[in-house]
Image 1 (spheres, rainbow, N blue to C red):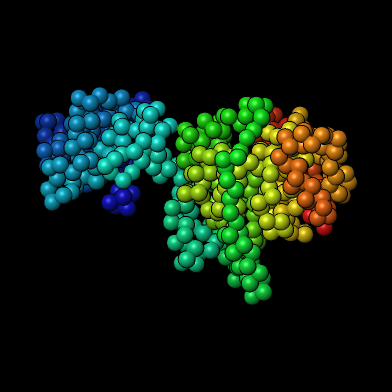
Image 2 (tube, rainbow, N blue to C red):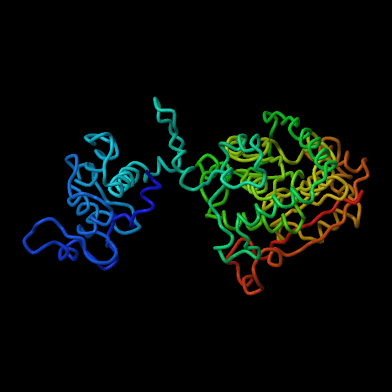
Length: 479
């Protein structure tokens, strides 16, 4: 039905700016008989244009001319309809959408049927309750959140690098936000999804040896065997709680099914830009493993799987976001306190990514967490810690934490009493990394030089991608 409708002319749903229903009356014959199709293309709210979309004037007790008139009076072009339950447009739309009275179970006027579905959907869906809460539609096996999911997202398996039937089946209920870098104008990398997928497939065919595949398969199995820690022991201090409480609200308000994700504004274009840019900067390769610290809804790991065929582990402290990601994003997701990473296997990952997350921690917790994250990398692996805030922890303070090429215990922790150390959840993992002899090379780059198309985009703070004083750390494990 939808494919057939797409082949038709635009749906006559509303008035064009500056037009009115009466303005189209000239299309009718002078004796008041049935409208005659006007020459040229169909026009909005022109009864004569019904002929262009193969709509009879009347069928199954539905007067399409009157329905068109009613929706044109109540539905401005591109805006929600202003309809009451007693309006003619809503009553006709309800009848058509339900299929009542349709001969043989269908209507000929496909454009009118789809217009009726839009009218009914707007009437029931455009309410705060429907858009922000997950309500059951029992006895029917659906939830209201599915409306937002199917409106804002696309199935991951529509275009994936790995076309293996088993993987394709695993991605059945996985989604990513609709975002097209080639159309946004905000990202320095503007490849289309199709190009990235084709390139990834070419790399899988032409550059992956049997030995590499065997090793990748072994490590992927290790990743699948990772057990998330119990979330019952998560405890944060009042300061950290005040910083992250807004994400709890966003997760529970179904932001994950929208372009907002865990952010206040619609940011899916920007976040896809970050993922694709960093994937090129670090050198993602099919079959590799990535650990996303502060993964939120899991959108970045889904894009990573879709476009680069890397497998991921995501960690976040927001239970609602993890619950959504576990169902709808690609990868394994754990609800945990990211400051204590002893449960994550050491030396497993090729890459660590974290964007606009670690800066929420105190400086000492940032240092402990950064040390542990490097310990999760293979030697030669790289970590990207993005959108660090210079007004929270400067790159020089990170360098002090790193002490040149080696991590050392921050002085605050070294001087802390046993009781004070117990309040540092990342300290045991940091000490373990130190004992393992972890060494790291570090780079600091302003985000304004990583993501935009050219230097003119960096001026001002129009985008979170370039907002001063944000900067990224690129850490390479060298031992």
